[in-house]
Image (cartoon, rainbow over all chains, first blue to last red; front, side):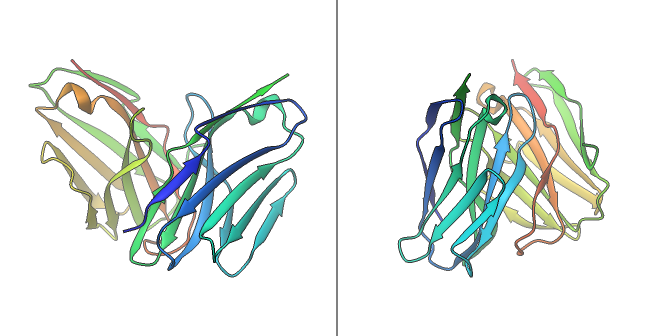
Length: 112
Length: 114
């Protein structure tokens, strides 16, 4: 089945810097890769997703890139703000499984 | 923030108790999910229902028993739990199963087993 590895587990940046979180997946048939943000004490919420027919997607300060050959995808946050502090989860779906398989999460701290 | 609701928000139960968690979605979705979120295994899928039929059971112990009486409601019945079952239990829904649709999460039930 699918296995998703996520790095780093914790990330601390200064406000205004960029943050990058990387994930790898094992099932080459996976075709949908969402990212969820979970603020402290709140529910996970989708912030951006990408499908396997595109290599990059942007939404204001966040972007996701996908390398199907290498089976990895990354979340990029530019001009980080304190409100970006949260746990971010990557996930992969498709192929042999219909479920979302989540990474273990990255706790991002943005210091003012 | 009212698309998926869960009750109760907090629950403390002894190992011999029986309790139920409730989830309700107001989004007209056909798929519903139970996840367990703990420090050791964040967002661990437990069960999936599609059109009220269970389609996934990820090797979950029988002390957890799901029920989906209709496409809007999902329950998780708990009995003779262990302390290691203490965690945040999240319900989610999506438009369809086996499709790349966003999953909408509820606020979760924080369960403590004493």
